[in-house]
Figure 1 (tube, rainbow over the protein chains, first blue to last red):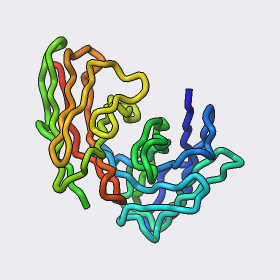
Figure 2: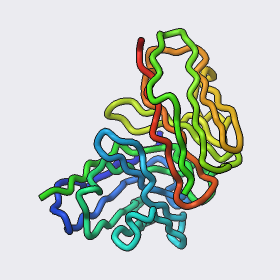
Figure 3: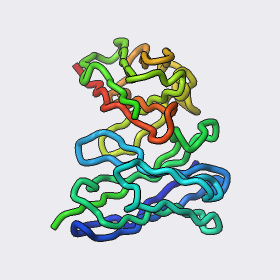
Figure 4: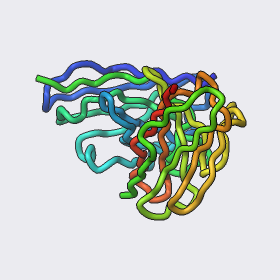
Amino acid sequence: EVQLVESGGGLVQPGGSLRLSCAASRFIFSSYWMSWVRQAPGKGLEWVASIKQDGSEKYYVDSVKGRFTISRDNAKNSLYLQMHSLRVEDTAVFFCARALRHCSGGSCFDYWGQGILVTVSS
Amino acid sequence: EIVLTQSPATLSLSPGERATLSCRASQSVSRYLAWYQQKPGQAPRLLIYDASNRATGIPARFSGTGSGTDFTLTISSLEPEDFAVYYCQQRSNWPPWTFGQGTKVEIK
């Protein structure tokens, strides 16, 4: 079964930086769009960013543009989210998600990691 | 940005009953709508994509209908494990991909 395991979360002060990682296994990582989706405590889901198989296309929700960068290393079967200038409102569980191949642009998500908590607080 | 509005916010039903969840889009999304189930402390699970296609391994009691702006997720006979929060998500106007606010299906 597909496995996605996030790491790198934790407590960070406003204005700080954090890098999330997602280790993928049991599928051909380089063949899929990948995405990050977040969920603030007690709230709904919010798509954050998506990246094409070869990294040539990347998309972001407006609220993170210029602050977050999605990337991937297909040789390491890993997805990343570099987050800078973090705000209190970025506090959330961040999920790594694989895109269903049928869905262009990485636009729907068939497998998810268990999530990693990022807390932005002073 | 396309806004998805789910109703009701909470649905109180008993096992064996039929559940009908609604998702309305602020503009047409054609059939590019998905449904997810999320249980407390767990990641979401894809149930339906493109309005009516069940994802791999999803039981036949889950079905999706609709197109344009109005969509429905139906659970024909609730099993104990179906009590959860359900989200719709559009992929028509991209990006951003947007989710509804969720419908909680709780045990009556």
